[in-house]
Structure formats: C-alpha cells, structure tokens
Image (tube, rainbow, N blue to C red; front, side):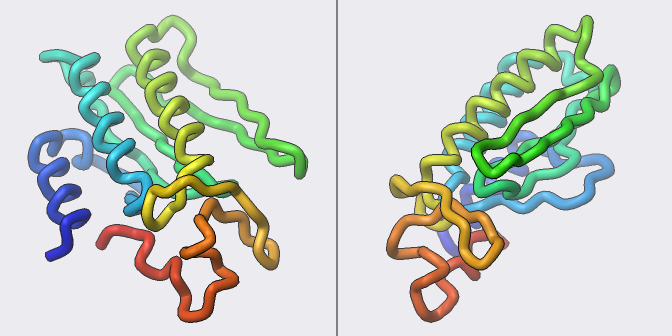
Length: 157
C-alpha cells in the first residue's frame, strides 16, 4: 500500500462520520491530500461533540482546483459556479443563519483556493492551465503534455 492510501485510510478511520452517508463521489487527489487532512481536522475541531450529521457529499476537481461539498442535518448547501474564462465566480445558497456551516464553508474554500497553486499529483507549486479543453493544475513534471499519462495516478485509490 502506498503512503497516500495509508494516509487516506487513517483519515477515514479517525473521522469515519465524514465519509458515511449518501454521496455522489469522493475523489481524493494525492497532491492535495495533506490540505484535505487539515480540512477534516479543522472541521472536526469546529464541530466538537456535536457532529451535526456532517458528511462529505462530493469531493472532486473542477476548473483545475479541489472542490469540497458537504451536507449536515441542518443544511444542504447549493453552490453555483460559473467560469467566464477569466476566473470562477461562485454563490453558495442555504447557509443563512447557520454559523457552523458557514465556518465549514470557509475552511473548505480556503483549501480549495490553496489547491489552485499546487500540482494535483505531487503538491509541488503549479499553475492552472487548459489542455485541449481540460483544465488542470499540474507542475511541469505532471503536465498532460508529458508522455505516459502522468495524471492517471492523481486520485488516491
């Protein structure tokens, strides 16, 4: 077993409630795994003893950076994301009057923004680029331009 898979399995054991419940996909990327671990730890500390039914609804890459979607017993936030070619503009609905969920959203948003400067595969500094219509944040070593499909091992499985 590789070190990232061990790290992810440990995370799922420590915070099993976060990974339990209905979801539409939980893709964890190697280059962003350390930040995701920090996100889970910060959310767990924020929730304290009342886990509020928190669980990840979806984890993925979109527009070249990490995306973290969650639900709780109190809210099911809805995010609207629009890319105009110059940037991504977002609005999140369903958080009014829910301070804990607003704080969770900030933790997630901060980590998402950090991922926009880190390689999806190794975590080294990188920039978001478009490759044949696909947007990805990869360093030169893991660029889709490099022969041999360097991105195929980006997801921890």
